[in-house]
Structure formats: C-alpha cells, structure tokens
Image: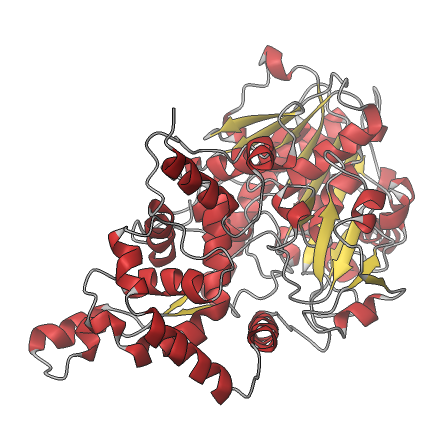
Length: 590
C-alpha cells in the first residue's frame, strides 16, 4: 500500500499541466508511472535532458519526447511542461538572471532553472515535488526574490495584473513564431479524430464559445488568442483555427480527439478513400502517423470497429517507429493499425501471406521538404546565464565554459502542422547540391511507387510529397505510368472526375509544362489530362496550406494499358529508365 504522502505526490504529478484525471491518463495509454518507485523530480530532469538534447537525437521536440523509451513520466506531461516553459522563457531568463540564483545554487543548470521557476511562478499546480526535495528547496528559498523580480518585469512591460501579462506573453510568442510565408498567415489546422469523437461533439465541447466564421480569410486575419473557427469545405472533419492558436491546453487535444494536421497533409488519405476500395491498406512510410490515423478514421467511418480490414504501417527508422506507435495509441487506432517498426517497405516480400489481401497503398516518402511552412522560423528557448558565465573573474577555463554554455536554443517543436515527412526532409539551397539531392530522391520515390504497383491485388495508390519540385512530383508520376510494371499491370492515373468531391473541386492542379517536357512524346491533350489529375497546394496563399503534391493511381481490372490510353504512350526508351538504380541515402539522411 502507498503511504498517504506518496499517494498525494503521485496525484500531483498526474495533474501537472494537462489536468487529466488518473482515469483519463490511463485511457490515453500515457500511464507510465510505477507508483512504488516514482521520483517526481524526474519530470524536470527528463524535460531538461530532452530540451538540451544531450543525446544528440534528431527530429522535433515532440518526436524526441514521444519517441523516448526511458521516460518515467507520461510523454504528454513532459511535452506540456516544455511547451509552456518555452513560451515564458524570455521572461523567466530575465527574472532568473536578475535574481542571481544560479550563482548561489550550483546544482541548478540553466534549463532546470527555467523549468522549475516556470512552475513556481506561472503554473497553477506549482512545483511537482515534495517540499523537502533538494531542488524544490533550492528554488523556493529564493521565492521572495524571484516573485519580486517577476513583478518588476510585469510592471516594466506595462501590465497591472498577472492575467493581462499572461495574455500578452502567449500572444507575443505565438505571433512571433507563426509562419508567414507570403501575404497570408498560416492557419492552425485541426482534424477531428473520428476514431474517438465526432465533429458535432467537439463543436459543442472543446470549441464551445468559439465563434464560427464563414471564410478562411477571417481566420488568417485573427490573432492567436481569438476563439474563432472555420469548418473546411474540402476535407471532412477538418477545422481551421487562428494562426498560432495554442492547442496544448485543450483537453480534447491531449486526449487524442483532436489532431493538429495541415490541410494538405489530409489530402492523401482522403484521395485514397478506403470506402471505394477493398482489402487491406499499407502506409509505406508512416511516421509520425497523422496520415495513418487519418486512414484509420476514414476506414472506421466506413465499416466501424467490427471491420475486418487492416492498415499496415511501415517505418524503417527505429526512433520514428516509437513515435508512430505512441501516436497510433493516442489516436485510438490500435485495433485497425498494425505497426511494422524498423521495417523498410522496400524489403517487403510480395508473397508474404499476411499481405496477400492488400488492396491499396499510401505513399508519402522522404522528399526535399521545400513545401514545408516555417522551417526557418523556429522558436527560441531563452536560457539564463549560468554561474560560470556570471563570474566576475574570467579565467581561460571560465571563458571556455561560457562559450560551451549557450544562452538560447533553437527549438523545432512539432511536425504535426507540416506533414509526416518533415523530420526526414533537409532543405538544400545550393543549385548543384539540390540537383543531386532531387536526383537521388526521385529515384527512391520511383522505386517506392513501382514496388507498390507490384502488389498482386492492389487497385489503388496515392503518392504525395511536401515538395514544390516537379522532379519529385509530376515527373515521378509520369515515369511510373510509363514503366513496364504499370503498363503490364494496367495502372493508370486517377482522373480528376474519379476523385472525391472536395479534391475534384480543388483549384490548384499539376504543372502542365512539366508534363509536356517529359521525354515520352505526350500530346498536349494527354499532358493536360495528367496534370489536371495531379493536385498541388501552394504555401503562403489564401488557401492556407503548406506546399504539397498528391496524385492517385488506379488499376484496370484484367486489362493492360496500351497506346495513348489516359494520356500515356510508353516507349522503349522510357522503359529502359523505368528503374534507375537508387543507391540509397547517405548516413546523414537516414
């Protein structure tokens, strides 16, 4: 049996930041507490380690939290602490520096100090630790000084109340970090997860008190704190909120009922449309899992939980596989989705009896990432000056330590808004390097499409990238369509009139000039037809999307394409470069 004191400690940790009841935490699959062994201060140590990235892990802050194997605390709690502390870090750095507590408390690192002082001064829950814990004692012995400096800081900024100060800080932080790539700010897109809830339910609960607007432009003009929403007309169950609107404090988001996902990122699953095809589904490059769980939601709407069809999610990277598994569980997709972690789709045995009923595949491979919004506008965690930096006497060792202790960290928070491939995308600006990068990527992308086309019972494929380059988009589609595999197996482009209504009506289509320039002798009519079948999104426009591309392939029953059918006339020269050898990515890119 737990002592009463220990039970209170565990309950305090469970309630930290996200306000879940113990029941809700267990329902989320986020309960990782060993009540008999828990060290509540591990929350701050774990958050500090992830923030400073001592293990040199790649990916976003969110992926490092949810992909960690060794956390003693629920990932949602660690993530909430980090995000909230990040917002307040410019203020907290000033307060900590002016109070000079780091010169007195040598056991406190700058990152730990920010996290602890945040909970002391800002969080309504306070520091999640026993009163006699050394780190809590170290902070609270300076509480009077810290509180006084916090008050002075608030007054210097011209705010009479803490609530007014709080609103100012959060709106400034969100506004500063919100990507603006053109004349139109980028909305906060949120998908209602139909595996757990309905649009109507969320409109009456999570978004109760929000003002519904009729145009997306009203959303783009709103400030981050405005409670406004727009119900999208292209993708079902998709909402747009004000640019930079904070979702971390909304309970439905923490429960997996709402998923942050860019509008364009919703197109592939919607285009694949599980209701129109039979058999199981493969997501070939699934992490972090937004498209995978969207597929599951669409499949659930079609057949319910009694449905016998399965989604197989492949992810070759082990860390991203852990993120995928966590996000699938959080979304409630466990019964529909089977995760093949650390498994490369290209190594799959086509004769595997477990995959014999695969009827459709979603392909969203590694790409150049040139369509991603806000990659160069990442927020900064401001850290106080460490005691080593504040010494008056500067020895050579002190100067070296000072250089090794950064006063700020650029933080890539979250990939949910920018698409599933953000972590594997690397922006290249040099023309020669970019050309080589596109060549390698397009070869890999084509390999993936051709592999998908070889599944015996497959009849539907979607291919997408978050790239603006035709080399990765229309040209991959054309090379796939003119391949021997596609011709012999009857694969054709999914025409515009075959697409779901919302995507059929989408006004930005493929690049006709790129299709005409393809070395296959396409007529203008055929090139226009293929371009019209492709879907593009442009970032920084009134549409409010990232840069994106998606196209679909469908298979004729028992027929082999010939001649100019649907605008493709394969030649022998084309067939010779069907499968340009892909030599793989460098170690840095994997």
